[in-house]
Image (cartoon, rainbow, N blue to C red; front, side):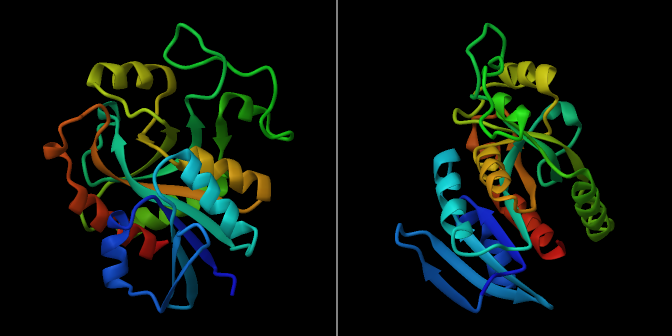
Amino acid sequence: MTPDLLILCATLAEMSYFLSVHPPKAERMTRTGLRVFSGRLKDKAYDLMITGPGVFNAAHALTVFLEQASPALVIQTGIAGIFRETGLDIGDVAVATGEQYIHTGVAADSSIPGPLPFDLISDLPSSREGRYPFDPARVDACHERLSRGFEHKGIRVARGPFITVSTLTSSFDQASRLHAVLSPVMEAMEGAASAHIAALYKVPFIEVRAASNFTGERDKGKWDLERAAKHLGEACAII
């Protein structure tokens, strides 16, 4: 059965709170060992697919799913690093207005590559920069819904561009240089890959994440995975 909502997340731990509060009705496994949980929230059916971390795993997982079904909406989710320049804090939530895989392009002396001389998706010129804009009306609706849902919980909900990396930003200085060029809200490892596949299949797509750490902070003792997972689960239920 095709679900109303397909949720993509890199690891099971990130979705642990959501699954504990909204237990799935069934679980299956793909030929390559990907776990897919199925359940319902009120009148909506969802599938939750654990993709594995990184762009290759995310692209593979979503392709496998979309070859078999066409959900009404795909949501990429998970925990993420938040940029200090946003003024947001660990535990806050953000909706992506677009994604950019910053390792796509022609090598340059600046923080990010220049655009390729060809498009990666024929009808999406921004793909030559690894950039995938999202539907503004869908982003606004998601942001408004989450803002209402978190209004009395002390959790801020932002919106803005996200970046996807294959090498995690290793210092606050490096993070500041990235923010000066791209003004991203969050950094993670899968969003642009999923956005690319969703664009190829022309499936509606959004990305929502909860901050577990500040981008550039490599001391995992300062990360709050449990808090981020809780807020992430609440965000998915609201959507």
